[in-house]
Length: 296
Ligand code: PAF
Image 1 (cartoon, rainbow, N blue to C red):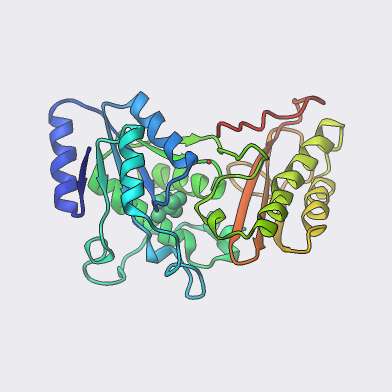
Image 2 (cartoon, helix red, strand yellow):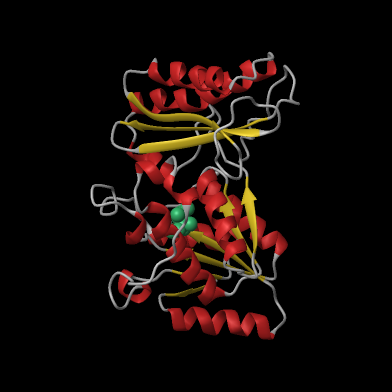
């Protein structure tokens, strides 16, 4: 596995792969890998001739009061894990390398989709995500890029950006990877104290409560949202931001779950803000969903 800190090195690598007629798979990350990230890299390895992973904590997508400075970082460990998972190249630039002129003047507007839910709670977040991902796409030139479904709204925004700006890239969404007890894996879980870790389980429990109510015949989004909120609010250490049932692509609110929708939850648990989501499929019966412990 090769490592480069420069866009020039990245370009040279991907140009060489394309010259050898290898399709490039790309996994953009902010590092501090867990099984969710590694599942993306492994899938890219299976599906593409060359696998590029970027590790870059992007300042543009953090608000002034957010955790850019303290976001967990461990490049040496990440490089070892990326190599084991099958990456061919890791691109790990410094901020100056990505944004040599400082904060870019021209950025990518994520549109209305970027103003809701995560976008409402984190103003400017999706503009920062779209801008860095567009720049990475331009530099890497992958045929397919891999994103975790834990950031469901991010995945929807990226898909929309790729469609609207005609990037010739296939976007693959990969299932959430959970701890055995159901907690969605996240680099920010490392901030949780043992008590907060156990309280954080209320997010997946709340989503499962909604899935269970749906399987039992409840179709009202308000009732399903209440099932999530009640479960999360029962935990003293958890401060609910939103519990919502939305159209899985547009993020429009739905009154009744008549076709597959997405249940979303976001909450602050101690220091970190955590998010999770699950499919709400009215066709799934009492046996409930596959929690997919294999899944980010
Ligand atoms: O999901 C992430 O880790 C980041 O938002 C991404 C896509 C790497 C852009 O910085």
